Length: 401
Image (cartoon, rainbow, N blue to C red; front, top):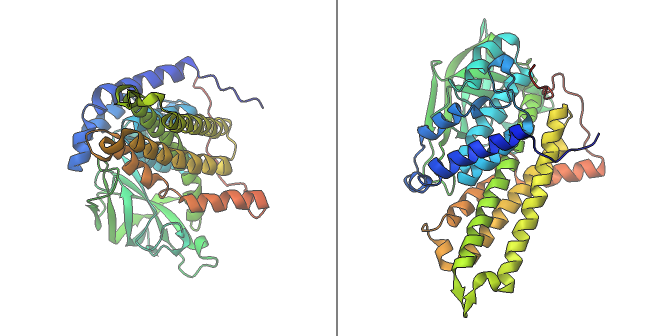
């Protein structure tokens, strides 16, 4: 099957619409929200108006019905403005809504997916715990069956949109004694309004300060049995398939951040003069610019390949992992170069490049650390890892009639 790298007119119109929103409404205001560590709900409302909160959900479920490359392009433009906007797409669309599309039954899609696709409800993802990040199987949140309910107890940490989301996709152990341990994990749709659900905000993060990040506390939360996503014991598979989608959005967004760093560097290099000429004429500055260009172009191709595979309905765990690892490393490298090119000014909040670096630093940790992705790629290459068919797959992109 041939890969076509040419964007459609629909893709280009989407890029333009999101770029105009970023240029006109995000870039002029984001600095203050970042400094104040405040989440701006107006950004979320505008994303709803643009149809981004259901961008790749089929029209059947009240989404925009666009393809997965469109999702990547939107994430790229949003993160060019600020990482906090792409994070909304990652957790609401990538980790939650697309997971409901893949694993939910029709009743769950009607009740939860449709309102999320319309942007009337916001979803997020509750996997990480104080003692469980990369080692998912060590999570300690429990879910005990009690008649028509599961009783959930536990604490989730580093949850994006913790204080904003209406619905949480929560992972808990229904069988704490299962061997291997990951087979005892199940997934549940938890509403904010369920008794015993509490959330709190994490302050003074290094980056993504304009984004809401916090914890979810579950204290004897009674979750109806019909809110079990998939089957008991499928939680690990569901979580890993969700990460294929979330990591795709992170990789695409990293391209946008890297672009922002490059654009800021080019602008400054033409303005700043040292030793009687613009710094753009200095060879070592040119070297940094060239490295940024190469990294961005390579990252774009990896993201496009992953998006193309998603459109075809092909398993893309390996390709998405590689795109996420590489593009996030490139974004951090580009942000670092941008600070170097700006010199002392790059070290201050007067210019945006220090924010780019702070935001880029987190992406090499969340949704699979750099080290986890290296292990994934090595295991594929060495033959230690092979993908097994999933009971339910993310549907391929089919244009609506």
